[in-house]
Image (tube, rainbow, N blue to C red; front, side):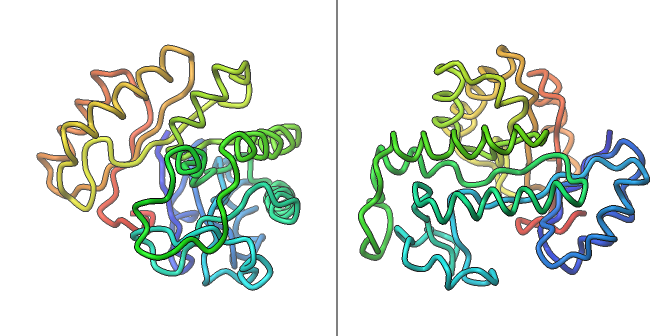
Length: 256
C-alpha cells in the first residue's frame, strides 16, 4: 500500500489521481468537489480526511463562528489557535464535518492536535501572548474528545490521532483501545530536513513501540529530502516494526 498525504487544496486532485487501488490517500477535503473524492474511492483508493480536532485556523470558512472559544495562539502556526473542545458547538461542528466526509465515502480521519490534552495539564506557558480565555481542565478535554471519537467511530469511520501521545495513552489505559486502531506521529527522526533531538527521537520511539505492543497500527511522517536520510528512516521504521512511513519533502504536506 502506497501512502500519500496532501493538505494543500491545489494539490489534492493530483494526489488522488496518482493514488491507485488499495493506496491510502490522506487529504484535507475542505473545498474539494465530492465527485473528485468519490471517483478515487470508486477506483479502490482508501481515503482519509483531515479534521482539526482541537485547533481553529483563521483561513477556514467557519472561523468567525468559533472565535469566542479560542484559548491561545498555536505557537509556530500563525493564524491558528487552540480551541475549547468542551464547547458543545465545537463538538457538533466536528461531528458534522465527520458526517459530511462519511457521506463522500471517506473512511477515516486524520484527527489532529489532540495535544491540547497535554497543554491543559502542563499549561500554555510557551505562548508569547496572553491567554484568550481560561483553558478547560484536562479531564473535560479528555471526556469531550472521547465523546466525539465514540460518535464518529459509531459511523463506521476510523479515527487516527496525529501525535497526542498523552491522550492516546489515557484512552488505551482507560479501556478504550477499540477507538485507537491506528496512530500517526510526525518527526520521530526528521523535521524540516534536519534531525530532531536525540531526546525527542527516544521519547517518540518509546511511544510508538508502546502502541505497537498493544496492536495499534503505527504510521509516521518524516520530513527529509536526501537519499541518505530517507534510507535511514526506512531502516529505522523497519527495525522497530512500524509498518507505515510517509516521507515528505514539504512540511505543509503537498502529497509528494
